[in-house]
Length: 368
Image (cartoon, rainbow, N blue to C red):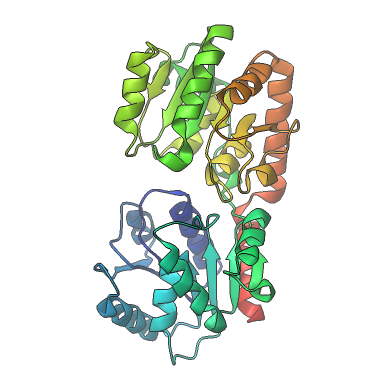
């Protein structure tokens, strides 16, 4: 198949990572793939270009950009595309306009999150997206919670709604006991510390301040605990100020963006996520694959990954006391940590592989 993927850009994020893994897996199976970025390419484009995959940029301007639509259409025709796979709302309605009159076998869209709020300034995007559904073969959500929400809000017709959960390369990194000691030494975490890690952008939706408030409580009960953030974003300076004001700069480490997250997760004792909204989190899947127990908020698809009392604990969002209590329960019971981590790893081996995700998408392409 000649498959074109369309995204807004290839900036650092879960959507971009899962799209890259999907595309590379499709290439490995013999399909001809290219990817078009509505805006600029972004730093992750290099991963695909190094593998010989064509990455194009439309450099979309503000407002409705007819030149961007024209560029997409040209690339679809050049490739003789027969499967158009778009990611999120804007990429979809731009691509549907570009594909008008072309004989494509399948036009499929994936929504990688939970959509926008009722009063969001992006509501116009959802209206334009809904108008393209008559030209869409399948509209895919990445978790059942998201599919239900899109259908209930009449954004996606029930008959066209599907679920394909995200997948990752589970067996890409293997763990050796000596690796943990080396990694902890490199990260400045001593063996007697209990280290929790959070991976994600410093943004309102990730709600890092609930996690920080919870950590202040945990620190009083578990003095040897440390919190490590892997990420960057607009709230970075506010997080630094919080740590200075509460005198926890020695026990809260801000390590910035890392491109070796899968390799270093093994160094930690617990994965934590305090988001107020999530789709089907790549970060949680990677935590499961690394054998980490998890404390996460019960939003979006989180409970489809973190099964309460099996591979972690789930709590309500914006509840620092509840979050701290869950962390303390896991930190105070080594047997529970090990059991939950093993359960998560076993689940990831069965259900979180990129091969499963790719197979499900290829079946949908063929059903159209």
